[in-house]
Figure 1 (cartoon, one colour):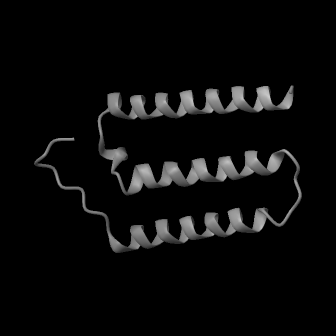
Figure 2 (figure 1 turned 90 degrees about the horizontal axis):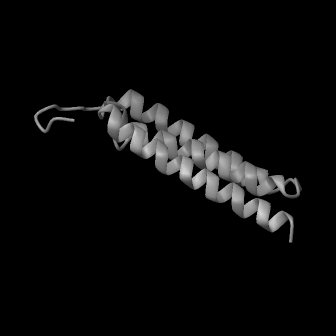
Figure 3 (figure 1 turned 120 degrees about the horizontal axis):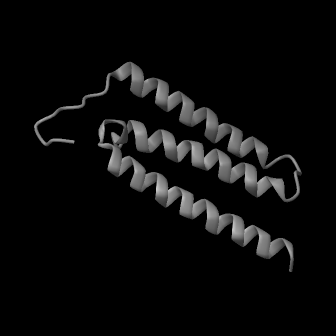
Length: 94
């Protein structure tokens, strides 16, 4: 992103993002009431990942950045996913 470019989000798009984030937060809270066993943590992490994606693209303006920075952020999340999966596999086989 060039420093001279302005990316101003409209109030309507910010309101939509707020409603989506509040909805996902409500789902996160409600899902704790159900006993899903080992899937509870996986569902919570999935919902949190979706919320992180929304925050990165909307509030941190990642959608306006160049391809290299988006690829770098995607690589970090892929590495996080691999480490999390390895941790769950290790925990499962103990």
